[in-house]
Amino acid sequence: MRFVRYTTRNDPTPRWGWVYQDQVGPLEGSPFDEFRRLEADLPLASVRLLAPLTPGKIICVGRNYIEHAKEHNAEIPEVPLLFIKPVSSVIGHEQPILIPPQSQQVEHEAELAVIIGQAARRVEPPEALSYVFGYTIANDVTARDLQRRDGQWTRSKSFDTFCPLGPWIETDFDPADALITCHVNGQMRQMASTHDMVFKVEQLIAFVSSIMTLEQGDILLTGTPAGVSPLRQGDVVEINIQGLGALRNPVATDTHKV
Image (cartoon, rainbow, N blue to C red; front, side, top):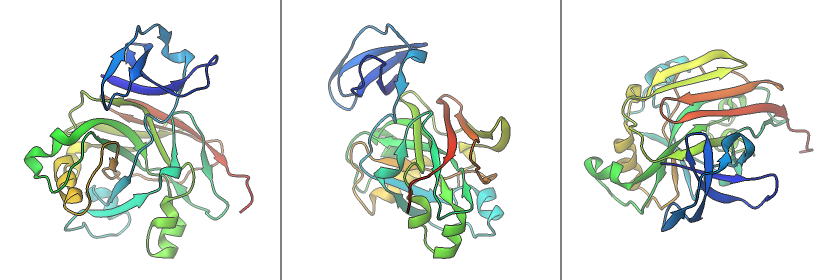
């Protein structure tokens, strides 16, 4: 099933919904708990899609595709390389990625995002997928020049708008071998399969849950393939994952003073 968060022209209050073909229906309750589906009678094109959830934690994995590590002349990690993005970086489908004045090299990173459905602590890999609620698409936007300058990744990954998510949550999805592509202004920049991950989804959940408890609504970003490239004002980034649809965001310059 596909779940969305959305507003309408007549009602700016965010609410949960479900998608059937190209129609949206309201949801009474939360998809994480008990809910009731109402009739899907709104055209999908008529609603404004928001980020499909407000996550608790956003845990990310670096260098989880061999070719991406190679393009940065970095070693393949022996264990998953983790970092965290703040919830304040989250935006939704069609919302603009803002290039901050502190950076001259902001890049896209197309990723599969895993949404945790129940508390997970020290789970074993064979059990790990049973803790997953669903999946969505993420763009781990990165200020590459600041990442290199700082030597650690917090600042470069944490600017407002640096975590587009969407367009929805898909609960019926197999993460084992799905094609990921990223286009900028219609030109292909990234293409790989989730099969190419160094550490698979179940291994990542097991590893992370051995360190911290994963709570309902937490998100795990699973790494990006090779092909990351700079973004400029006026660009449009579209990330497609087979079975999950497309996440699209325009790029603009952040004009707020530092």
